[in-house]
Amino acid sequence: MSTGAVTKTNEKSKTKVKFMVQMGMLAAISVVLMLFEIPLPFAPSFYEIDFSEVPVMIGCFTMGPLAGAVIELLKILLNFAINGTTTAGVGEFANFLIGCALVIPAAIIYKRKRTKSGAVIGMVTGTLFMTVVGCFLNAFVLLPTYAKAFGMPMDALIEMGSAVNGYITNLTTFALFAVAPFNLLKGFLVSLIVFLIYKKISPILKMGM
Image (cartoon, rainbow, N blue to C red; front, side, top):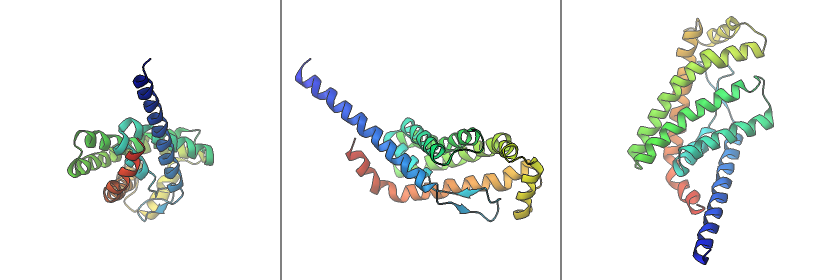
């Protein structure tokens, strides 16, 4: 093997290592951000907004959709290892899907159109897609799983929603008037933060690639 080929191989290896380190770093930051949760006046107390998707989306925009999915998975696994689970992993898997529903569509669109308008279109698309996926998974996976995990009937969860939001009367209205606004607000806030800081942070990440 020639010296040039060896050098290229070494450079590729170093790039892969830096790539993995950056994904791990962004996942770790995401886990820390998960600790800071903001309660909402229109949803039960177990719906709280955090900004853990901000580093994930930054990683998506910098390194691509697949890297973003890996960062999201690492975030979920790290949080699982640190805090454990009350849903036998079902809740964590659903949260992984919901997180990916936000960042991956945004990254795919931004990858094709690397402009401010491309980023905005991507983040709006991701927010809407996450809202649809979030409503479906909450109605058919998360809420039934939480009810079973905590040994309470679904009606009890609905009543918790009704106590803070009079529009919630059943599972459908729970999804429409608690889950959907929650995801729309989270998607908007995460997207706004990424839009404001991405250009300042991305050069730092790209230096190591």
